[in-house]
Image (cartoon, rainbow, N blue to C red):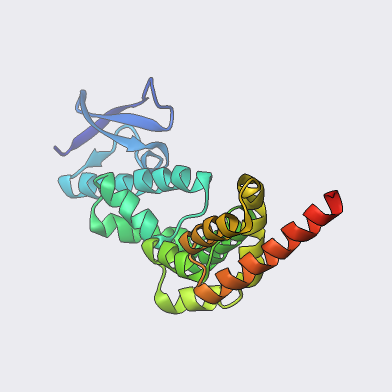
Length: 213
């Protein structure tokens, strides 16, 4: 494929990529940043073209990751899985992951903390379920233990129960307890936390009922 660069044209549908022409014919395309090192009149060998295309693969994968990370923080495992699904080679996956880590866009400790804090704020759950979620995201068990050590399960369970209480308001105490216990167990809270939380919510419910009466 080697030859002389006779033209470099920006792609009509993607201004961040260019088409490189060799000896008057289309040769290959490159990301704009990679193409900055190529000029008209350059003579490119097969080896040089191969290196340019390798850099292009890395830049393309990196750009994909930036868009993927724009929605929410991701774990390193999630990013690697995403790139593999996009057909990116293992070598490029590692190069891109390394770059993202160096600039602070990939940090499993920060991600794990974000995940737990987000759950605590919007969808409280017990350590057991949080552990399952973090492990599914590829977070190392030692890091999982570290991050979950600060979770206040009693507080989380009470907030979760309080948000659900109105849905079971029409039930008697026995039915309320059964429904609430099942709900909290599904959120990963252990037996003792569930028992204490249901008792606490029942007491609150009774006090509110007495006040209304």
